[in-house]
Length: 280
Ligand SMILES: NC(=O)c1ccc[n+]([C@@H]2O[C@H](COP(=O)([O-])OP(=O)(O)OC[C@H]3O[C@@H](n4cnc5c(N)ncnc54)[C@H](OP(=O)(O)O)[C@@H]3O)[C@@H](O)[C@H]2O)c1
Image (cartoon, rainbow, N blue to C red; front, side, top):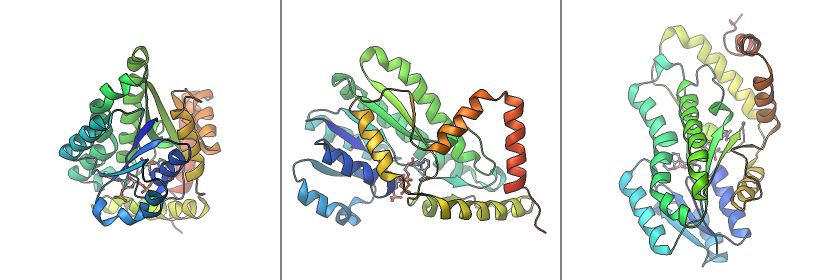
């Protein structure tokens, strides 16, 4: 039986992936932090698939918890797929983001996937497995007031693209799934920079309004993401970068075909309207 380890399964995309892999007959190492308070989330599913699901506690930034999870998986016999999904968004102008906030953003979204992947690679090499990184449109583009989140996802993309080539001779596939906005708990789990610099007050307010209007329109892409991720894990798709939504495909297309100066100009006009406009 093939097996997969998924981080950040307490909600959103991770939770959706657990269901899809179980439906497809995989063994799932389903990880989340504060597991003891959250076991009930998977109570029904565990009853339905008692031999195919193991819940493991994993705060991804805690090295000792990562080690314990890796040891458990080693003792269970092997791993075919790792999905680095856990993540959150730190928003706000750089001057409003504290050093510890920025570092924590990088710890969760970047360093945790680095070290979890490194620790599980011996098992993944044995199985000719896959590593899937859940990235974002922010992994290839920069957005104002999102420098920390964009930096973390750009770092993830550099890591994954390098590993894509490094691990190919060892039979391990690497994929980045770049997503646009999806209705999950991501919005409510977003953290804002703690600073209150007056120079960014208006821009921050405009950003909140823009984000609220986007959130209203956002669709739940959990199932679409789960289907695509499971297809990747089953070898039905092998591209370095996969995208499931039209907006990510379109943005990536235009960013690639437009000369940089036109693209940058178009982005400036867009941000002037959405974020830097003065309130009347
Ligand atoms: N939704 C979107 O619009 C969107 C767009 C592009 C990319 N993404 C990416 O998709 C991934 C999943 O996000 P989502 O949309 O499913 O949001 P979500 O519903 O907020 O889920 C995020 C998951 O990550 C977990 N997590 C956060 N910090 C963690 C930590 N330190 N240790 C362990 N788990 C941690 C959360 O656990 P807790 O419940 O304990 O906080 C939760 O299970 C993220 O990497 C995100 O960057 C999302």
